[in-house]
Length: 258
Image 1: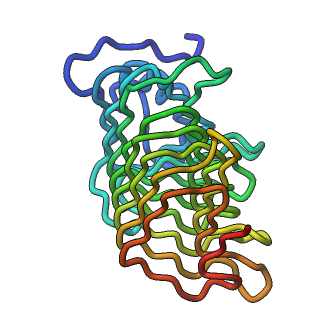
Image 2: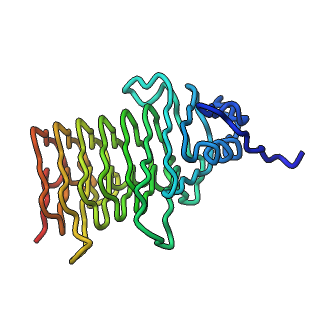
């Protein structure tokens, strides 16, 4: 009666539509998806194909999550699409460990999903102190596709960081033991000086360390009017770049300031 959705006790896989999500690209599915996220803590969640408007979801890193969409087609338009309709700078998905509590070893897995923002939204995924595994995920139209702070032992397999306003991927400090495998960092940097991927660590223990790029594509960041880099490395050690492609970035393809 009050417009909220009760949390269901689900055995097996929690389907977002069981919680009232419509996925029709019209309804506001925030309440339904928020209830579904609670049910997925420590278990498995499924988002059927559809377009789900929402104003932000929060995952807690002390819990394991295993979230999958449906019919991911590599085009970012079909399948399961989360659309952030918040125009006040809120993030689509926040993995929140603030204020900083402790190192969590729970695995957060997200597969076969598109996370889409709008010109005034925040990040597609904003993650603090997490171990994350993304596979077949589109992050597009956000301020930053993915922003990582103190993240470790994570992998990104066939993740497309494309057409975000600032960085496609942004590590601000302490990104450790992370692999990017067949990822795209294309068409980002709609504002001056941003990058397809930016690893900007901090001095001391907050440097980025042990990051590997395998068969990744860094092209088309920035344009004739706005300067953008393909890959930026700062305060980063032990970075491996294996069989990657760099072209048509409006500033340097690879930028490593001293």
